[in-house]
Length: 94
Image 1 (cartoon, one colour):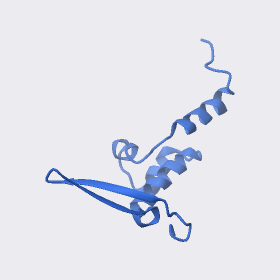
Image 2: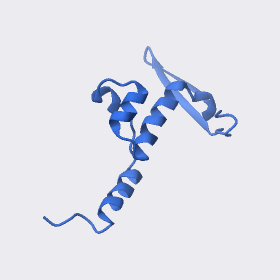
Image 3: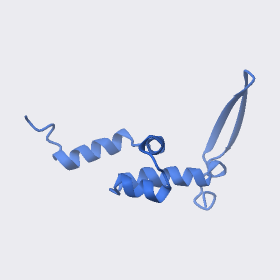
Image 4: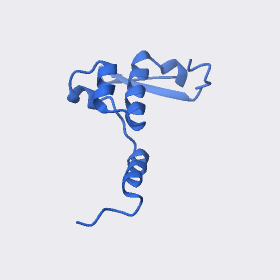
């Protein structure tokens, strides 16, 4: 699917074995796995407003500790959500 979506940007994968650096560069679509899809679903599901418990149920995570390693909420998403809740007017006064 990644190939059909033309995800052709080169991605370098670096590993260290026995103190020796090994590097391999592949097209982004060649790096995609089912695990990539699972992580992407978890992050996008949360960003779109799915409850964390529901996403955990769908992905099969039993604990919050293991689930939170899957999600990658960007600074842009944090900013948009903050502005959605507080209307861009800053923090409410206490």
